[in-house]
Image (cartoon, rainbow, N blue to C red):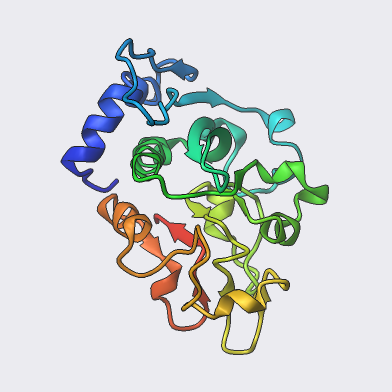
Length: 231
């Protein structure tokens, strides 16, 4: 687990008090952080507390099946706030490994504070057959999905230790020309100024790096602008 910044620690303390303890083995699996009574500043978007819940196979739907590398007991569903493309506050869901919960809550609290725009955030079982291509074409930010890499090895998404952010406008491209999603060719032009694009050194890359997560945009082949992972 990465070492959070002072700012991120303050955000987590205020917005998610008690969650890290609640997510530890042997302690409660469902935690809701208390609401703050502080009045929001004019024009601000008050962030609701993150919520963490345990999941079972039924709750994971088509994103999980027997033979996946982690059981449902090792996964958690996080409901959290994000700043939308429409300039408004929304609630979304990510499923991650239980040992990644603290990082993910802290990271997305920081991104919300920075008002980094995310178009949508739904678990991939909302798409037919949990098809990642459909989720990416929908520009959907997601995490867990029990799926393999082209090599046949398990993706880190299958362990709940990877997050893809705004994947349509932050595509995956290999030297062989494999583009994911297939509809993202216009967004290979990284000089574009579309909201939600991720660029080296921006708040998204910095915040994930502060917690020890790697960005696929730093890879050489493939280059995966949407992808963040922690091994």
